[in-house]
Length: 315
Length: 293
Image (cartoon, rainbow over all chains, first blue to last red; front, side):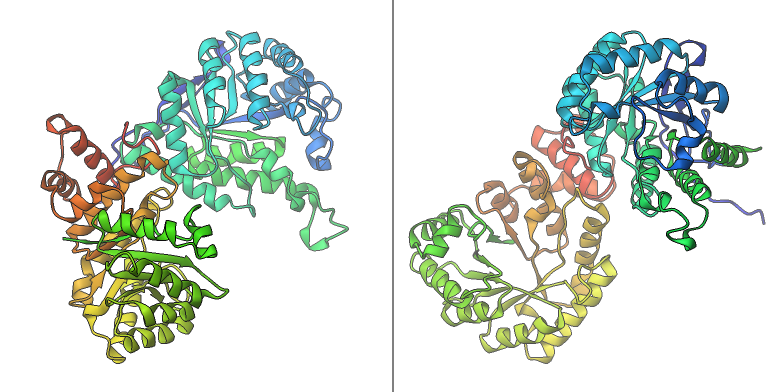
């Protein structure tokens, strides 16, 4: 008797979203099955990796994370070009860390000028990430959206508390919105509904479920993302059928585990390898949970993740 | 018919809390009267953990309320000294709200139930906390009823509370609550039941909470829910509890049966019930805009 392999019954698919413009534009989403269930459906667009660039020289990074970018961390354009030319970045994520009102509090105009300069200098899609301070992000993104009209940026985090104003700016100047919610599937669905009500088209919306690295609750992130995909693919929940973006690098690299020198705690092992592997493994977990875009930092971690991707999808 | 226990006489209230502390009878009696007039079957007297002089407070609240109404009372405190003080002065067979299965509480609590011939809510909260699914609820219910019976308390005096949790937190817990309710009469024939109805809508925007509470009540009633601790001032709940909303019950039952319900032929209120039932069965995922999508 022939064996019937049970198959998941899918009733929905993830929407496709095109990021950026021109011939370096990237399309994400479109999955018709659970992540890497290629025996049950398709992943027409493999997950993409965006490399991080900071708007000001990082102060407290682990040596291992700084090393690959020696000489360019003071110049976001040079940094981005290095990511693209030397490390094959398919996208850039500019972290507007210096706009933080509790930090350097750089103004909106200055931030927007930098975003524009960077957007003009590169042709891959550009993600611009704020500080999650609602007032400041609103101010910054309204200016950024206007100054960078036509650049088809991805802007985030857009949260319930600032979605109206940032959403309206994104809508007006045709940028894609990254909807952020704090590891909660119900709130994620709600924000997507609200952004839809605001008029954001489905192909201009991606979701950021908020993620953390290994050792810091990644299993909760996994579980929420997994449930998002179950609702989207098997329960026809069309307000969750959006690609997922995971801003994982900064979560991994801020932990004490990647920063403690081996001399202080020998059992932690080689500090460089430790940081790279933590980033790569955290990213791999998120891929399995359904990530469509990973924001990553270390070129070696990225190489490892690309290897995993290639092996997972080999015919 | 489901009995309603009014939840509104609560020490957490901004007016009633201070009134209880100052022993000012006015606001407490006004609330008790209002609940009685709303047709509530029991008035819950929630004095909180009442660690300091809880016994005096409970006696005062019971006496104060009994001066204006003879509606039976539900004595709501985790302080067993306060509970006993209330039982001593409560006129009609009162309801103890509640006794959990934590070892230090179960024996002493049931002893009071027996001694004062009271009704008791058996809260399915075990030594390890919240039950994770329907089976753990069953195990806890069996333990509770067994121990109560051993002490001579009949099933008719036991009101099992399976613990309802917010729909926005974990839908599987809501489903487990239904599943358990469907088994209760097999486990403990004649046992009664109750549920903190408003828990289901905790975390939901205030103006939308009644819609979840109402549909949840209809769904639980299908499993024979004996009583619910609920908002005394949502008249719709009273109508549902009294069996006056058959046209709503019918559509909710259809959703529970997995039938395809087309919204086209339904009125606005029925549509709200259908959408809510779809959320509470887990068929669609909850969001604050569940009624709009």
